[in-house]
Image 1: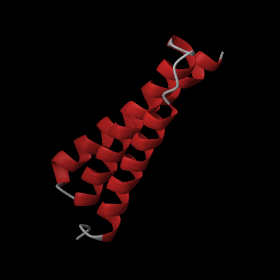
Image 2 (image 1 turned 90 degrees about the vertical axis):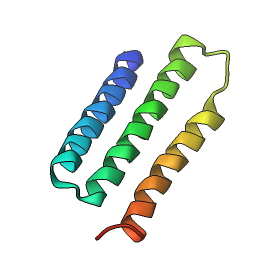
Image 3 (image 1 turned 90 degrees about the horizontal axis):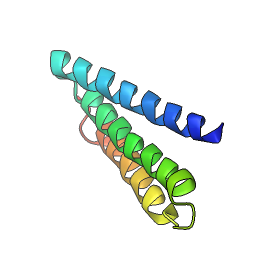
Image 4 (image 1 turned 135 degrees about the horizontal axis):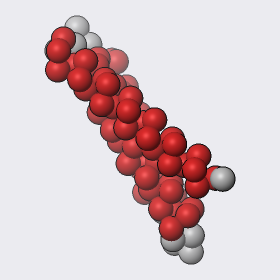
Length: 85
């Protein structure tokens, strides 16, 4: 059951990323770009979570997962603070 939740979270993240990036391509609003990039990185984070807890549970990928979520949040924070016009 938990495996399905991890995969659904990844699927939701990739769907959000695609929709945000498509909207950015039409409107060229920078906040949409940064949000789409953030969700793209969150997708990588969700895939790492699935790999870490389901595929190779004896390996510890918590540092990689933490770094990807930090980078994703940083991208969105950068967009919110500096580049929103």
